[in-house]
Length: 102
Image (cartoon, rainbow, N blue to C red; front, side, top):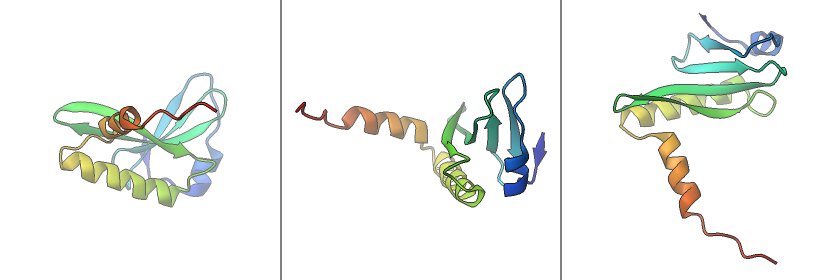
């Protein structure tokens, strides 16, 4: 179900027995996923070269709806240019040097 998300609407989403999501009709691809535990997080669904994926933008506790929309727009813009944010994150994680043990 798609609706124009508001901060009040996101705060009011209640946990159910199964995970569910509510899509934003203002920014296509942005949605809030609500876990049975009550945890809520913003995600962005996108496609790159025909491959569909989603990326977690952040918890609703630490990320405002406005910031989630801005992040989603950035992800969708990169996807439009053929760049997968998920693949970028994986490359960055692999290229990060291991920290020396103290």
